[in-house]
Structures are given as C-alpha cells and as structure tokens.
Image 1 (tube, rainbow, N blue to C red):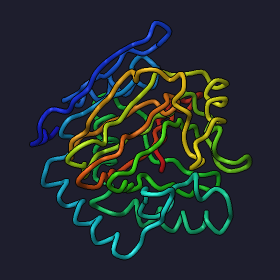
Image 2: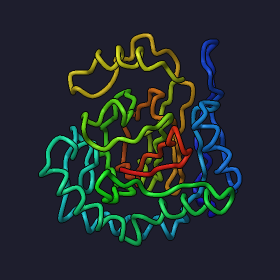
Image 3: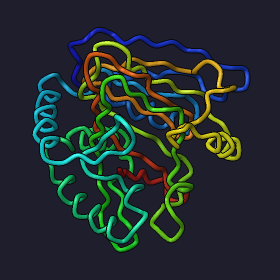
Length: 280
C-alpha cells in the first residue's frame, strides 16, 4: 500500500442515538482494507478511508490521462459535474445508450491507467481473504465498466443523495439481487480548499425514498431539513480511497482553487452467493 505525500485530512465523528453505524474506519494495510469493506457492507461503519492508496507518481499518470481525454470527450451530468463517458445508470434509459455504454466499457476496462485503482482494489480483496469479486456482467454476458472518471468543477457541489441500483435501474434491465451497495472513490485531484465529503447515518429504504422525493431544484439531491450533523466529514487528498455505503445519504461541498477528479465505481454484494460485483 502506498502512502500519500499530503497532510492528514480533516474529519470528525458524531454518531446519533439512533445511528446503527460508528463513524470512520482508516486502513493502511490490505487486511485492514478487506475488514473495512466487510464492516461497511454490513452497516457497522459509515465510511472507509485508505490514505495513499495510489502514490503521487500513479496519481500524476492518471491526471495526464484525464487532461488528454477531457480535450476530446466530456459528458455533462448536472451543472459542474462531468464524466468521461456515461455510467450504466445513465445508459439504462435506451437501447442506443446501452450499446454506446458497452462499447465504452470494453475500452475502459482495458485502460491501464484509469483502471489501476480498480485492479488494485480487487487484488487486495482477493489476496487477503480469497474474496469472490469481479467486474459485473449483464444477462447477455457483456462486462460492465469497472470504473468511471468523474470531474467536479471549482465551486460546484454534489447535493445530498443516496444510490441503489435495485431502485434506480429501470425494470427489465440488468440489476443484481444485492443486499448491500458501496460507492468507492479514488481521489486523483482535489481542490486547495473545501470539497469535503459528508456522510450521514443510514436510513431505511422507505424513509430514503420519501427524502429523495424532496429533491432540489436541480432534481438531484435530498433536502437537508432534518438531516442533522453528518456522521462523518472527510476532506480527501490525492491518492486517497474513500468508500461508503451508498444508502447512507452523502454529499460533497463546493471546492475552491482547483477541480475534484476521481476514479469511481460501485461494489454490490450478491444476496445469494456473497460474491462482490463491481460496476460503474
């Protein structure tokens, strides 16, 4: 495991009386990574942070790759948030978008730089505990993308929200029978100031749906009324890996003096086999 060159991030912990998770688990060895991911899947903790998951040299290689790619292709999501290509969730709305997505997935999964964090993550889980883990395939045997590059522009935020493939992928389109879903972000660039990640304690599916109904004017996010103080606040540094259970409400503060870029993916645990599936 590589250690980053930056300062330690700021974070605080505050578990409400009704919260079922403790706060932040910090890992710096492969066994810690495996244990932290398992605790996260089981709802025992709110987030896992692995400082220096990528070295500064590895981060620099991916930054240069992002710079070249953004000159050719950007796909806007909401104001200030962009990605290289499209996610499976975005593509699942039409057959044409799905065809484009799977063409992109083949190229993404063969990319040496962008997929480095995903490959290392899989390697650590397999090496330590022999975990059954791999990139997900759809019903037709097509491999989904193992990761996606997300770019959040300066002064832009990501509103409070939660994610669930079972609820958000349209009926009839591939969605595994998963009992827990994680979001994993490896930070490539971070702003000089701001950009903190907030994670609130888990809420049940019905309450999450109600809260999702109170969307912001950008049609993305949950009203912060009654959310209270976040369970965890983390200010990441380049090279850090941060994972959270995506049914926990989470958000990102605006950053100043620089963009935020990540290699991101989801991890889902199959309810029947226990296999861990990765997709983006």
